[in-house]
Image (cartoon, rainbow, N blue to C red; front, side):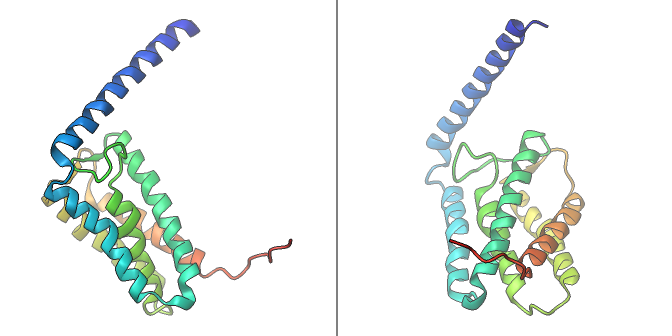
Length: 185
């Protein structure tokens, strides 16, 4: 296939994708924006952070945020991959052009992990990781599916369990690190 032919195919594909995104934004603006789902998503995006700000251990704040940032980043990347691979999708979004579910990735996952990291910090992290994974996979995901926000196309709840365990254990490890080089001017 010549470069020119490939360029034409990619350009047409990109134009089709852009048309679908424009349609999605129009639907979001006409139907989703300011709907009950949108307000629910906004509340889920803000209220857990407010709760965390009130209840966080201030002396551990930097470490907790470090772990939370890791969870956020990983959740967004994995959510976008799952969406783009057709494993799942979301019907209602707080922000229309974001293919991941903003409240889950940017608030519920990181805030939950940060709370678990600060509560009983000496408790077995493997048990905490398993509790987190089972709760998110068998309580959180089914609730969002029942609400018809989350649609699983080629995914099962139990697929999420090992991923959630690894995410929690990685965040736990990252927040326990003490080996940082001092900043030198």
